[in-house]
Length: 110
Image (tube, rainbow, N blue to C red; front, side, top):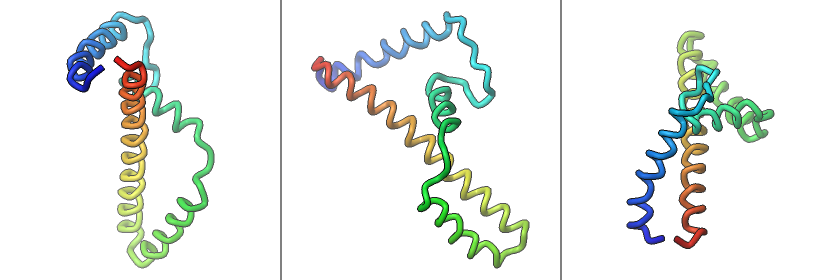
């Protein structure tokens, strides 16, 4: 399948998938979930274990700099950094799934 054909086919695939989801009886029961991608991401994060040592060390290093600030400033920056990390993790996970979907189409040779 040429790039042009994939781009033309994807809106149709999305429309069919959306229709199927709207007509299904599946109910998202978690307020963090509003789409299938969200559902997969939540399942992924819920099944993760401890952070790797590299991530733990980064938080230790961050705390070294934050301890010089007031507790209020420390907490605000720490929350911001954690939120930034979470958003990047979610984006990477969802982008990976999307790229995988394109790869499947490409591997089908259409």
